[in-house]
Image (cartoon, rainbow, N blue to C red):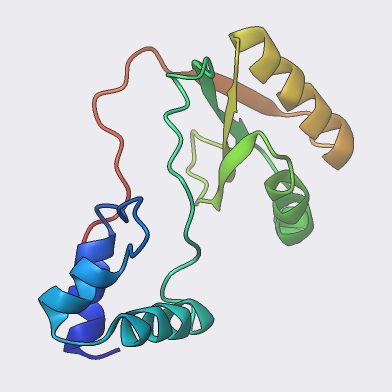
Length: 152
C-alpha cells in the first residue's frame, strides 16, 4: 500500500457519490485516471485492506432500534467452533473473543440487532440452541453517543 492508496482510502471513506462517474473526482484529486482508481480499489480489496463497498444503512432510521451485547461463557476448547457459528447469524454484527477475568467468566461477545428487545432475546435463544451455550447475559443499549467506522 503506497501513499496514493492511503490518500484514496481517505477520500472514499466519506462515501462515493451517486453519479455516472463516481470515481472521476477522486481521480482528479489524486492526479490519476479513473481506471487506476478502480484498479487500486480492486487491489486493496483483494489484499484484504478493504472488505467491501456497500451502502451504510441507518438501522435506527429503518426501525431496527434494539441492540444487545450478548456475553457468553464458552469453554475455551470450543471458542473457535462456537464463535464461527455465532458469527453466521444475520442479526449478529460483531463477534469477538475477549479475555476472562476472575469475576467475569464471559469470553465471547456478540452484538445482536433487531426491531425489539424481545426479538434480540429470541435471537440469543436461537444462538444458545445452535451452540449449546447456556451461560449468557444480554446488555441492551439505552442511548447511542457515537457510532462510526475506523477512520484514517
